[in-house]
Image 1: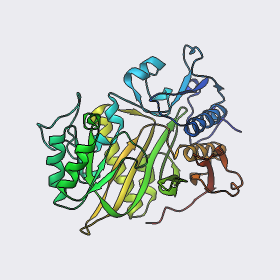
Image 2: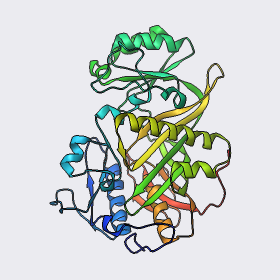
Image 3: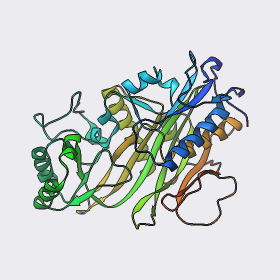
Image 4: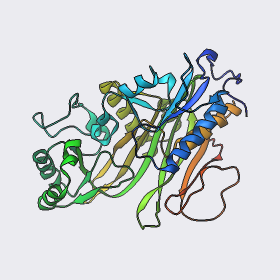
Length: 378
């Protein structure tokens, strides 16, 4: 396969000296299942081939320069320093000043200036323009006050910030229901923070994001997510289908007709600029879940739910798109998808399987669906 080290095109300026010589996975943050780690290892191998670099274990002594990392979670500044990561050219992911910055908490302000907050917290002006109505709280008193106000406009969704895939969430419809839920919740839950957000009854969730690799290679994308039912009967993430272009979110927006996908990209761009500037976030892989829908009173909403500055569910599709762009300099748009499924059946021809699945985890694969020449429909 052609690599970035050997690519010669007019459209992409390659800085040869900046290309990594080694690729390694950093297992940080804990709590990763075997299928998630397998996907990371698959991506690391393909990135090594793309760069013409060596695939090494994290425990291997680092060279003076040239090691590129794929962290399993967003890095804290302390973790980045321990890995020798000084800037975004050394990782596919992100670096934050405090752990809570990498969670849903920063998508909403506190309910008041006197409300509790962790050290370094910033109440960001203007964030409400690109998120749903909601608050982030760190005490029972603040949760009751914030919830009472939101409940006047309809049901409220409670979201523990460290959970993924919708796990642990609850919709409450009254102050009594909110108080009972808070009384039953573990003490540490409110110490770590809680998000209260307007609940939508009809909605579509868009994945909007961008990735940047050494050598000046950039992509941006918008797409939708699908869900699957697990063997235990729970609803879970089932993959993403993305329309990917060369360039930035601004380049992507310019290709889209007016409609929800374009509005989702605009909301994600605004969120990205505001949050990353406020907290000094370094990120070369950004994914934003943007929801568009209607609440129980018929009001329409569109806003960013949360961010991901780490390898995620759409990352294998992003990687395959970058490989395609590297091999085909004349192609500027592709449709790529990731699939997570518990169903049997054959894997489509040309798909890259990162995990074959077992009794408790889904089969995972990614593929290029088509080379697209038109913008996504609204």
